[in-house]
Image (cartoon, rainbow, N blue to C red):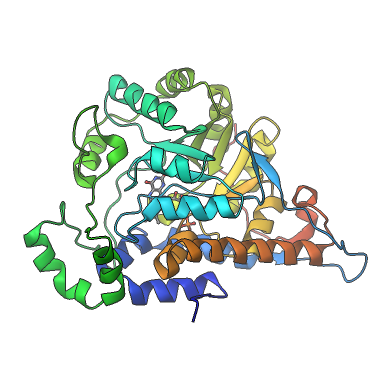
Length: 390
Ligand SMILES: Cc1cc2nc3c(=O)[nH]c(=O)nc-3n(C[C@H](O)[C@H](O)[C@H](O)COP(=O)(O)O)c2cc1C
């Protein structure tokens, strides 16, 4: 068997079988009751298509341009702190994205250095949170520039909502001997995962190399997280300052309200991502697909509007584009692919999405992703949500 899977749901099942329980549940994430997490995928299924039966396009163009990069399809890799999923981690994801013609957002909490990721895929955007003081932030921007980042993603929708009704994984600060002994029963129950790390004679080290101060060892994931938690949140003036320090494409990620989208435009953002962090943050925040139409309507002609959270199928991508997004970003979909089958698994996921987009375009009689409009969809009454209109 070559490990090929036909849907993202199957990749997730394989990820669950392959990963130690703690690692799997760290990827599953979600928060509180999991209402946003569920709404993110279920909302897509509430939207219907309105396909044609003749006069369909023989060829369909999926290509687009986002944050100054030409992409073969309107799907980007959203930044995730991928720790301990696969020994090649973000480098494998970057290679897969390059092979399928798209860009990768690299989390500042990633397990691989930016330079290695940029060497695997030059279409890389570095993601950062507002953490540390201005000097720390400037050093991180310099790291991004020197490492070859083509754009900056600033993620703003995080308010440290940690509890989950189904419990959170216990992740050690470092995988030293004691932690390994505690972790051993779980890891031994997943011999293929263990073998993959053992082959490279390395254990997942749970550090964040992109957050290291010059000449210092990389901080642990939790050490860096602590710094972030202790940082006062940014004002719009802080974000305007940050925008001035970065002379390339600049995305604000996590927008959910029209007034914040307008302020993002005032800040000089190149792009925004309408997102609820995959349902990992403030629970009961609606699925981004519900708030997208109002936001796209307000700012779609001034800024590139992306959407992330809940995308599992090509048809989801098409629905987001029809409601005003220029492209989408995916998180768990590629993490499941990575866990199921490494780089090939991520390519497999991008191929599934590509085929699904193409199939929907064919049915809808569209020859390009740029032709999609709300007319292609049946939007049930009461589907959309709008917050923050002036
Ligand atoms: C395990 C995990 C880790 C994440 N880490 C980050 C991160 O470090 N930075 C960030 O901007 N977003 C992070 N996200 C959010 C994703 O970028 C993205 O918004 C989200 O996964 C989209 O939802 P989806 O998983 O349903 O596609 C993370 C998401 C998950 C599931």
